[in-house]
Amino acid sequence: MSGMLIVISGPSGTGKGTIYNAVLKIMPDIATSISATTRAPRGNEKDGVEYYFLTNEQFDEMINGDGLLEYAEVFGNKYGTPKKRALDVVEAGGKIMLEIDVRGARQIKSKFGDCVSIFIMPPSLATLEARLRGRATDSEESIVRRLSEAKREIAESKYFDYVVFNDDLGVAVDEVVSIIRSEGLRTFRNGSKIKKILDE
Ligand code: 5GP
Image 1 (cartoon, rainbow, N blue to C red):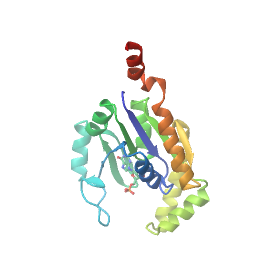
Image 2 (cartoon, rainbow, N blue to C red):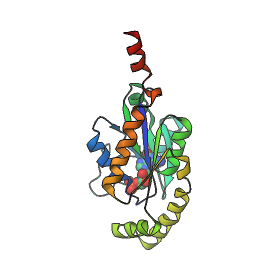
Image 3 (cartoon, rainbow, N blue to C red):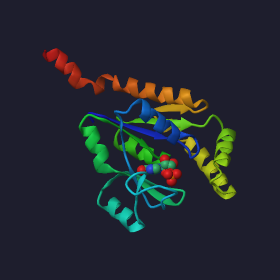
Image 4 (cartoon, rainbow, N blue to C red):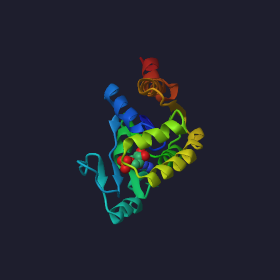
């Protein structure tokens, strides 16, 4: 892999989407991926902007045509990362960052060992519960389900390269930026630059 595939993941309500967007503002050279999903659009969401909104049949066609880098079912809907764009960016030496669920992140890590996987950890389960309740979009049943799923996911954080504790958003964003910068300086990612210096 010549570029960098960065995966941001963590339980629902942990703030991974907010961190993802803040990091992209600081590092605008990082490409993004639009996921495919079978869930219905919410509010002003548009097809091809937030997601590619697909039917179950269309999603299965993408799976069968080997069009997805990973996919998982999250709270009753399927989500997946289109393969071509992500691989094109990485093969051209660029960086691409995905914001996906924990199962999808583990699929990516098992296929691409060089990817940089970052687990966004809530400071505590009590904080996570307060955040889920604060969103006011979830029913009591959904909050209970998300909390028990979060516990299962937190136990999987050991399979990730890094863990960032989101108790202070600014610090968490700085930490993710630092991880990406440091990873860019790994010797194995700089083979061609080193060769160029030697060949001069
Ligand atoms: P939402 O429906 O709230 O936009 O997203 C629900 C969950 O799906 C979030 O945890 C998000 O990270 C995850 N998700 C979004 N896109 C993908 C994807 O392409 N693959 C996987 N595995 N999860 C995704």
